[in-house]
Image 1 (spheres, rainbow, N blue to C red):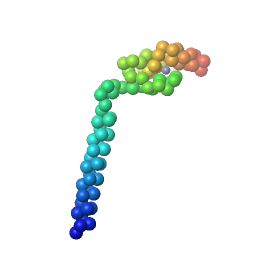
Image 2: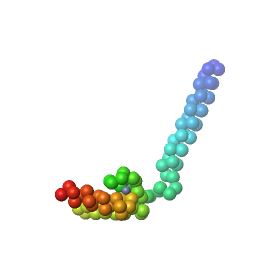
Image 3: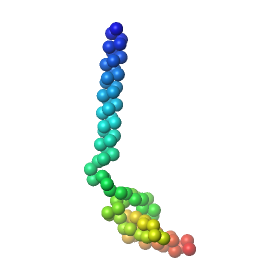
Image 4: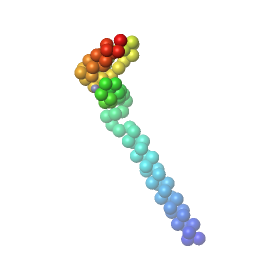
Length: 83
Ligand SMILES: [Zn+2]
């Protein structure tokens, strides 16, 4: 009988810990500052930039985001070398 009570307590503890972790995961995903903000990968240096802070380039109608004008220029140079 005692064993059953212990098992029950362990089970409840497990559920509480699991619920707590799940809650933390959700709140971590919705951390303030990142909410609704899109990030884009700079194809030149590989840095992730927020859409608002990015330098936006255009390639055949497709928007490309860069962290700086320097990267945009490098990207254009690379394109010119390819073609
Ligand atoms: Zn960059």
